[in-house]
Length: 499
Image 1 (spheres, rainbow, N blue to C red):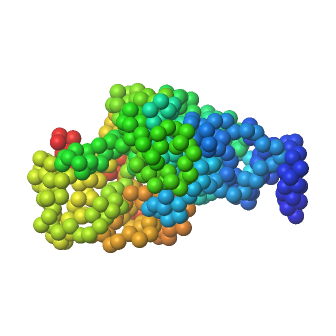
Image 2: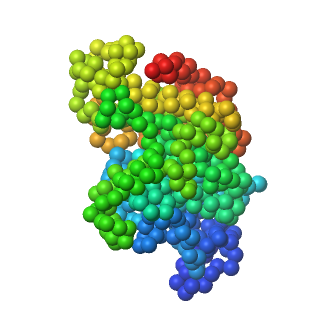
Image 3: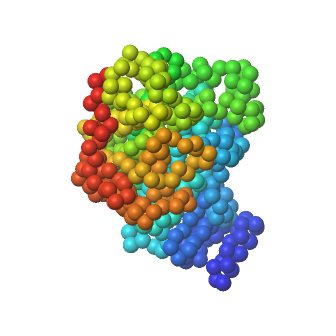
């Protein structure tokens, strides 16, 4: 009853523009004062959540394709009981509903209930989605925060054409989404204490495009002092993909600014930025996927993260780097929607690996099931994901403490809708570890729940100490089978290294 009364008073004061005089007006922690104004969130017996918190001004009008600008302070109490919206995007894998919301530079905070004896570690989650989709609010961090006694912040950042568009003479071209992430990290530095967090102990972690974003922040001089530790999940800095334009040619994700700016000329039939800023979101979404590569040679990202990693020009912080055992099984059905007869395997290898096709075929022979897509998935998993993850561990490990893991549980249900049968099953597909860290509503077996507890504890231990708790170079994570992995041998990294 008292909580309802307090909430009603807070709502009334919002309507008349009266500021709440104290950061914790009701004593239970659901009202918090930030640097821009007062928030009212949700409190239960185990957790507190605060959603839809703006960390930058709306990137609309003149702020479209501009580095994030400061938020205008608000009066009264802002309702923080709802999650942050999705940034503008098209419907995509795992995100069946798109969005036309540009005003999306908001974040969510989840903490355990009650006051901590000392400031809690802060973990900032950067979502994946190929830099074109996803949102921070997709990730339910309540169990993660309460089991680890940490503050979890899930953030949004501009995507696709809104985040990585470039144009000649446009300041910040190609890297607005990376700048957004830094604006969120600066918000954490200013406001962590208000939520019981320790701004001196911030871990950034992310998966897929989120893991690549962690690479970008490690390579960005402007991110200095914004975090103390980093976790890269299935997003090694040097992940590559076949170009399909030239057999044997593989390309990295990152692009030079000049290339992105050249790509932006003529977009939406416009001859200048003023015209482009006047275009509706719906029209820009027709070219959304064309701008999915963050640009380097920019103020926020002056160097290609692959080069930064190789030369040691990264922030030297403890880092946990991991991947899943069967990354490419999620993507191969999109490239090859129909079975690939084993008689066509060699032809496909030539298209992928050019003059090295025979060598690859000798290392990865067909297994006789009639469909070569599982062999193709294994070659691309090892070449593009697993061994580039090992390279990231090796190169970062020259300058800082680096730990490794491989998620190898082959029985997590495929939670992306509409995926067709795949020869041999999807195994430990790309993103399959996520339901064991966040609550996606995916049914887990008792063994997987035990594995989930182990992983959540390891991520939390890493956030506190920089050590996930294992001595292995790479720890294999599977239900009932946690232990050292023979990673380099299993993924034939010696073979790929000499090609």
